[in-house]
Image (cartoon, rainbow, N blue to C red; front, side):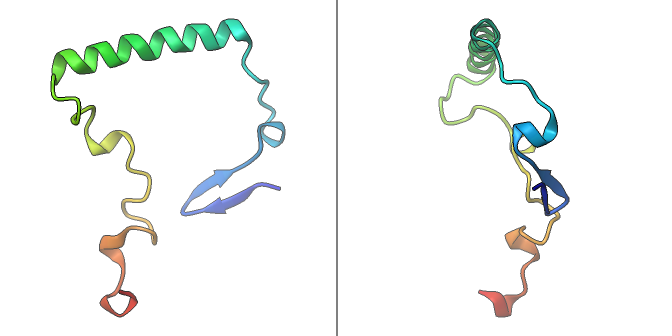
Length: 74
């Protein structure tokens, strides 16, 4: 059964009606990720800096954001 947490809906692939990727799809996705990593390395040769936080920040502004917790919760 789907559940909603912090404004996001989580479902199994079957519940969402998503077909699993084919081996050909997975190969193509691998190529796309490799190209993206190469572009990121060109933009920032430092391996620790791959992308800004905006590309993976899913909790900012939600009740799970540590900056929004009350001091009594610590």
